[in-house]
Image 1 (tube, helix red, strand yellow):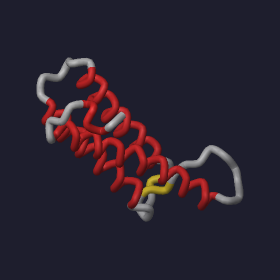
Image 2: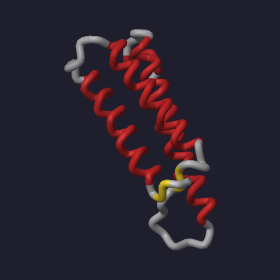
Image 3: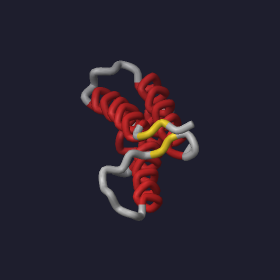
Length: 104
């Protein structure tokens, strides 16, 4: 059972929610760092799991290239990269570190 093109939609919603919550945290509109951290950790883990479960989600690619496997792998690498970013940022907020703790 595959959901054609559902991976990109799930990815855009989850990463958008993680970036939205992080931006509001950085602007000082959330009062608790740990709640933001937990939310971003959950969103990051769901994003990584959605990309890794290749049998469930098949990406919808916009090009008509013959090498669909390579394009699907590139899409999954991008999704996993953003998911790992959300996990790291969520762990930073969950442990109540300062923004400078990541070294960025």
